[in-house]
Amino acid sequence: MISQQAPLKGLQTALERADAQTVDTERLREQVHTALEEAGVETPTRPASAKLTHDQTDLLVDLLEGFASRREILEWEQELVIQTVGQLEDSWFTRVASDAPTVSALLGEPWGEVDGIRPDLALEVRRGIVAKDLLPAFHAAHEVARWSAVERVDHLADDPDQEDMEPIEPRDQEYPLMRPAFGEIAGQQEAALGQLLEGFESPEQLLAWALQVVGASYAEIERETITQPYFELPIRRRLVADEPTEEDMFIRESWAAEYLLPAFNRAADALADRTTEVTAGQQYRGESGDGSIT
Image (tube, rainbow, N blue to C red):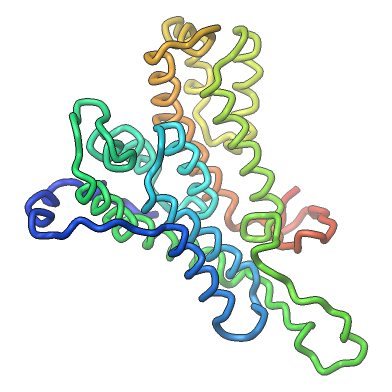
């Protein structure tokens, strides 16, 4: 696991001497994807690794581009949980979505007690997070996944019986890391996060959501934590509101940053070594036993 601190302090002086730059993120995104597709053999022999790199590229460029709201930051963090297979420290997700200077840099505008931030400083902070936090975490994710990535070379064989074998296109694959279990948990986590941020119609709906979170976190969320929003009435009132105020939304987002995302991160870490790889069109059947899920 990687422990990182948000790269904020000490940047101001260095940036006094730096020229402000803008980044064409979409051009950068396509350049990286194209370079990955053109490198090596015509089609990847370990498409799961290539799929992971492509997906990580999108998250990296998204961060460089910045976000329009704190909610977008949280949604990006949830995707990051999956694409780093839980290799960042739990506290990282809370810190990045709660520390005012960091959030301000990610949004490129005032937030919390930060009255304003220069565009060049905001960009440099985002670059620093990529260099100090994301790249090491992506590296760690590849270390976890690399040897379990299936080598697929049938389409390269000079065998008349295999002439119809189609190469696997990594970017066309449905599941993160080409593993259905990660696709399943990613969908569950996305839904649970979205429901929390949208709020609930009734206490009963809140309780039903709590059970969803247990599943989406593979029971990595603490028992006391999952019941807290119901039993603590001030929190419950913030989550069950017909017309949420800005304060209500702040509490919901803060609860997600403090409790939900760290639990999701632990779930991805726990799941990393117990998943089976398939192609997007291949029927999946989990089997009991070592290295699979039931």
